Amino acid sequence: RVLLVDEALTLLEAQDPDSARLITLKFFGGFTHQEIARSLGLTERAIERQWAYARTLLFKLIQDNR
Image 1 (tube, rainbow, N blue to C red):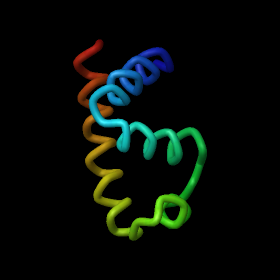
Image 2: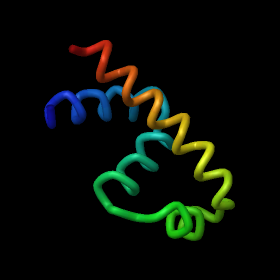
Image 3: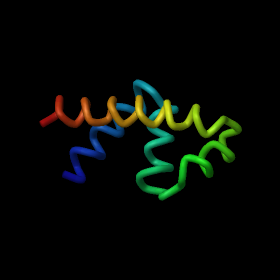
């Protein structure tokens, strides 16, 4: 499973680097939406929307690579 996530994240990074960075910060870094928003200079709501989008893309890439 870890390899599937790594492969999907690598593909996502090529397609959408911002989404890949957000997933890395949230999933691997353990940052909250508020912390990510502050560090990127965005609103927390913008991060919530981007997180929903990025998560959907990542899950789709994982499903496609199974």
